[in-house]
Length: 364
Ligand SMILES: Cc1cc2nc3c(=O)[nH]c(=O)nc-3n(C[C@H](O)[C@H](O)[C@H](O)COP(=O)(O)O)c2cc1C
Ligand SMILES: C=C(O[C@@H]1CC(C(=O)O)=C[C@@H](OP(=O)(O)O)[C@H]1O)C(=O)O
Image (cartoon, rainbow, N blue to C red; front, side):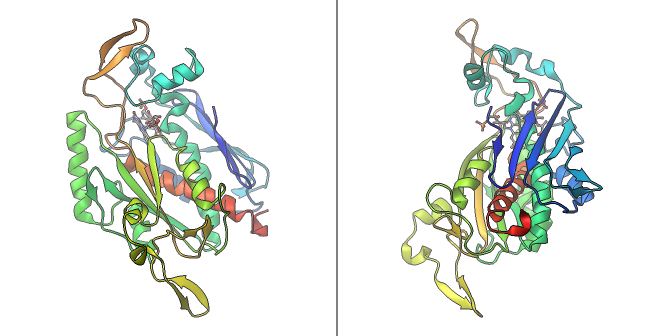
C-alpha cells in the first residue's frame, strides 16, 4: 500500500488503526535542529481523537516515542523513526463490516484490491489514524520552516454550508489565523463557531455527518521555488493532501470561484514594495507556473461528510451477494473537517520543506 512521499525530505507512514502501533520514518531532515517537544505534543493534541464531545470518543494520547534520529531532542541527521502505540481499539465494532461494506468508506475497494485478509478494523491502514504520524513529521517541519521565517496556519473556511469570515488572500492576518487554528472549531468568526457547534451536536444526535473546507496559508516563502508542468507546487501539494483520508478536492487562491470570474478582475497586478516585486491581489494563491511568486501561498482542501453514520443505510452482503441493511458501530466524528486543520498544516509544511530542500543548502 503506497505510504511514502517526498524527494529531499521523504516521509513514510506505517500501521493500522487497530494494530499494535502506528508510526513513521522521515529521512532528509537537517542535522542539529532542536525539536521543541512540548510544542510538538501540543500540535499532536489538536488532531488527537477524543478531545471533546464534537468528535470521535476514541481516546488516544498520540504521544510519539522516538526510536532513532533524535538525540537530546536534536535531530541527528539519520532517519527519524517514531511510533505511537494504539491503546483504545474496539475491534468487535467492525465484525459485521467484513461482509457488509460501509457505503463510501474503503471497506469494499480495499477488499477487492488486497483480498480477504486486509485489516479494515477501524479503517485499517486507510484510517485517519495514520494522519497522526503525518502530524509528527509535519509538526517538526513546521518548526524548521518557522526558523526560516516561513509560517503555515490554517482555518476552517466552511462547515456544511456555514462559512467563516473571508480572509484577505494578499495579506492574511497570520496571528489571528494562528490563534483560531487551535480552537476546537477553527473559525475566525465567533458567531459562526457557535453555529457550527450547534450543527455538529444536531448531526451527532441525528446520526448523520457533514463535510467542510480547510484553508491554509503559508507566508515568508522565497520567490522562485517549484517547477512547471508535472512537478510544481500545486502538483505536490495536491498529491500529498489527497493522502489524507476523506479529501475530495483541492483548489488554490480564488479557486473555482475565480475560474468563473473575469481576467480583468482575477489578474494579479504587479507593483513594487520598495525594491520587492509584489502583486496587489493574490487570486493565484502565491503560485504561477507551479513556482512561488513571493505572495502568500493559499490552498483550500474540501473534505467530505464522514462515511460512517449511525442511521440505517443500504449496502450488500458480499457472501450472500444480495442487498441488505447496515447499521454501524464504532466511534466516529460527525464532521472530520474539524480535526483536519492541523493535518493540512502538517502536509503543507512537509511539501514546502521538501521544495526548500532543493534550493537551501542549510537543509542538506
Ligand atoms: C481527521 C479525520 C478523521 C476521520 N474519522 C473518520 C471516522 O471517524 N469515521 C469514518 O467513517 N471516516 C473517518 N475519516 C475518513 C475516512 O478515513 C475515509 O473516508 C476513508 O478512509 C475512505 O477514504 P476516502 O474518503 O478518501 O475515499 C476521517 C478522516 C479524517 C481526516
Ligand atoms: C482513531 C482515530 O480516528 C478514527 C478514524 C476512523 C476512520 O475510519 O478513519 C474511524 C474511527 O475509528 P474507531 O472506530 O477505531 O474509533 C475513528 O476514531 C484517529 O484519528 O486517531
